[in-house]
Length: 253
Image (tube, rainbow, N blue to C red):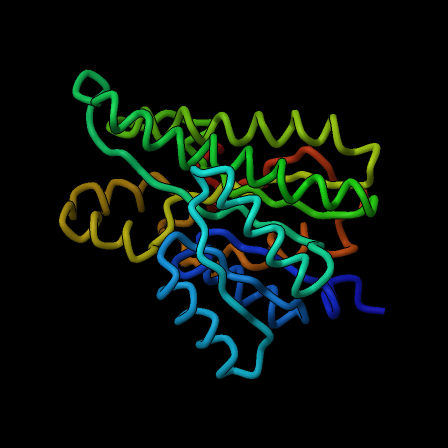
């Protein structure tokens, strides 16, 4: 028996069209799951799903705006109508607001909290209702290493990700009795499309981040696949409310 096998499972991945979300989508599909990529840009979600299908993997796409509850409700209804269940939810949709705290606008605050916390909570809620009904489910939230450590220039992002880790614990307490597991992955600085562009424009920050990591390098999106498969599979059936730091040891010191 392969306890990491996800054959027959249905996984919904928000923000699954690029970066960490796409890497996890591909990893779950390679482990046997049918993956539904949900993103606010429907064309990008469809393109990502088509890329997976070209590799012989099972995938589809649905457009969703995580900041709007009716959109999340529609997402769940469509997946349930198509597949009859949702076994795995990965909340990877997220945004980052950069800038010193004294310069952050109310609009920037609302946007970051709206996507990173409000959207994540209500996605968990809408999918969680279906998982509670069948007494089974795995929810994986994408937090960040800055949920635990402080870094200049991203205060609002850090606050939102700290909220993700605490929300993960709160939902685990409430839903554990229904056999719904809620855990999180906290990536260190990862060379996604968005982050790589920022670091290339700021080479001093790039070098600083590498030196601050015990492994002397930064993560690639694929480095987070293993943790996701573990938390989505039967291998983690007694793991609940945890935030796994996949950061090369950056939060050690």
